[in-house]
Amino acid sequence: MSATLIKGKPIAERIRAEVAEEVKATGHIGLVTVLVGDDPASEVYIRLKHKAALEAGFDARDVRLPAETSEDDLLAQVAVLNADQEIDAILVQLPLPGHIDEARILRAIAPAKDVDGLHPVNAGQLFLGKPTLVGATPVGVMAMLREHAIEIDGARAVVIGRSNIVGKPMAHLLMQANATVTICHSHTRDLPRHTLEADILVAAVGVPMMVSPDMVKTGGVVIDVGINRTEAGLVGDVDPGAAEVAAFMTPVPGGVGPMTIACLLQNAVRCARYRRGELAYPG
Image (cartoon, rainbow, N blue to C red; front, side, top):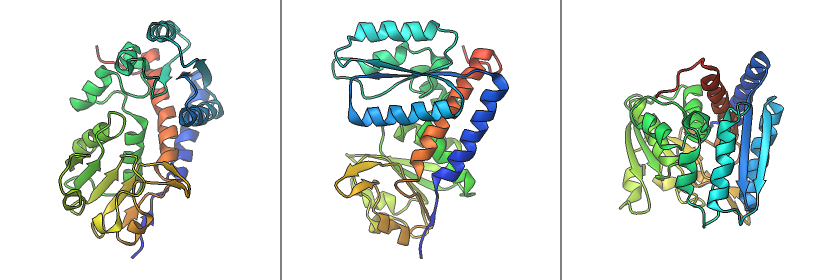
């Protein structure tokens, strides 16, 4: 048995083409990315996001601030971007330098411009089952499952990882699609006992190949969100050998990664619709 690979690139290309058509139809969608400091991984992510936004026809702005930028100065920058009527969506790249309170910065972003879906209002809407803006990676995973007609209703889903960016929103989206969801993390006892029951297993912890083939249910669906840089190159959170056990599995690279950027652009379109009044933002 060898799993069917759930490749993100073809789905992402379709989404990006749809976004580009939306930009043509509206004439303007403004996305600003803010990077504080010079973290190498963040540099790569920002460059990819900015490039994708330009290719889609966005008014894409790239704000770079030195690592010593104070929290108050960053808050002032966010306030300027909130007030700018040409900007529909704001992305502050995480992690921020240690002297800056990330939660305070995320709360300062106008909720309707919060393209990453991390503002407490957007997180709360997801919790209430009325999603507004949801993180691009979980949204992308759901799109991949739908693309392959994978049954979520009634399925047993296990999410490894409880981050605000992937794990928690992923669990909520799966629950809202009527899966029975278990969240596992570093304090979970006997992790394989949970993963072996998973019809859908989502690994999002950032630990290279921590999920071995003998932890995967035969015929299950494995979504590997991890992208870990090692001496051997990019590897996921799941051992590639799991493809001999699972029915469906995302590759690394080429799986979830392309979907994250595509769905970020999709979120920016949603932000623009809020600004234009085509969608009513709650409150």
